[in-house]
Image 1 (tube, helix red, strand yellow):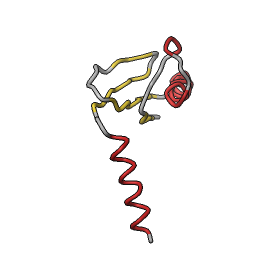
Image 2 (cartoon, rainbow, N blue to C red):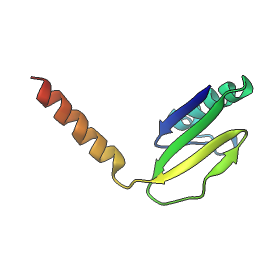
Image 3 (cartoon, one colour):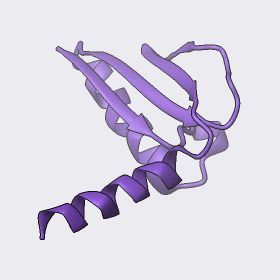
Image 4 (cartoon, helix red, strand yellow):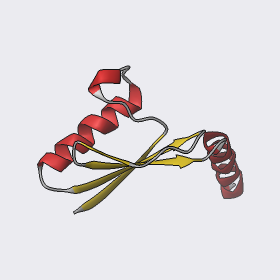
Length: 82
């Protein structure tokens, strides 16, 4: 199965700081061990090269302000429902 994650951060055990990045890493690692094709899309402020990390394809997307725009869209969606 092809599985994708979208996350604001992605950490490895060497840079463990907790939070969603480490949670995604552990979940993705488990899925890879079961034979799934896993891609992790990390939105970041700067462009970085894609990497193959422990069988996971990690893609860094340069999307400055992505979270801010996503929050604005979320508020707009709520206001349009009423």
